Image (cartoon, rainbow, N blue to C red; front, side, top):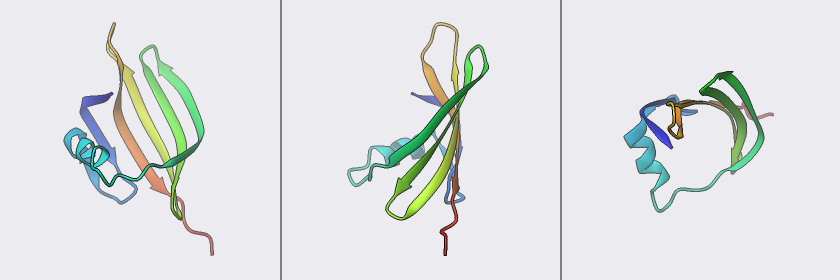
Length: 89
């Protein structure tokens, strides 16, 4: 589901590629996220923008992903960005 040309700008400020994301996702200690507020908008025939909110422990992050589908192929995530939500005082 991850496009070979995948790029991510993470909530940490780090830039990720496909291989580095797969390493983290399949790590034994990878902690799952609570996901909410999912939405999708079709930008073109085979391109969709997906937005959602995640929470892990006390950290909330706004997330957006661009998914594309080659003709006749599966949907794959091409780009992802995470933006941390400031902690309220």
